[in-house]
Structures are given as C-alpha cells and as structure tokens.
Length: 148
Image (cartoon, rainbow, N blue to C red; front, side, top):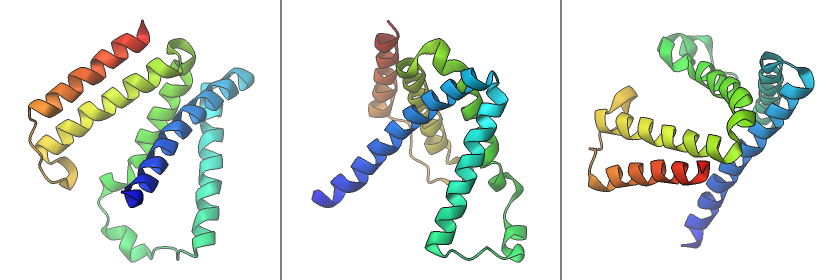
C-alpha cells in the first residue's frame, strides 16, 4: 500500500504543477502582451530543464540511426504540447483555472477512452463499458458544477 502512495502522490503533484504552469504562463502573457512569446518562454525554460536533467542523469545522446527508424508521427508530441500551452495561455484568464483544468481532464479522459477502445497508436484495446461511461458522465457533471 505504501509503495502505491508515492507514485500516486507524484501524479497528484504533476497535476498541481499543470495548474501552476498555466497560471504563470497566463500572467507572463499579460506582462509580455503576447501569448506567442509567453508560450515560447515556457518551452525554452522547459527545454533547458530537460537538457539539465539529461546531463544530470548522464543519458547519452541517441544515435542518428535510431532517430531515423522512428516513425514521423512519433516526433509530433511537441506540436500537441504547443497547442495545449497556447490554448491554456489564452483560456485560463477567460475561463478560470478550475474550469479550464476540469475541461482539460474531461477532454483527456474522452480521448483516452477512445484511444483505449480502438487501440490507437499501439495501445492495447480496452473496450468502452458501463463503468467508463459513468466516469465520463461524472467528469462532465463535475465540470458543469465547477463552472456554475
């Protein structure tokens, strides 16, 4: 039981860090008067942090031959991250942090259930069933209650 608490706590901390990141990015947008430059700064700081982590862990640079074998779509994660950051910078001030994060989690769960159900991008198929549908309904209900 104790072994499970640590990763669960870290996951909750990751969730809290998303809220902090989005509020800071929205504040930076207001200060810079630019959503694009706010997002750029967010990614630049993130790249620097990941480079420092790779150096601290002494991870070797992957060989070019390995990079050439990776499918083109596997490299597109940053594109979706940029979409997320850009939309969050604009929407957090308009919707509020709680509504934005509620909708974010609901969107993530809807997409996750679809990816599981159809086994997209190599995931094992996990059929959509009544408990999952109930979970989706509860998430949507939670967003409605938060938004009120």
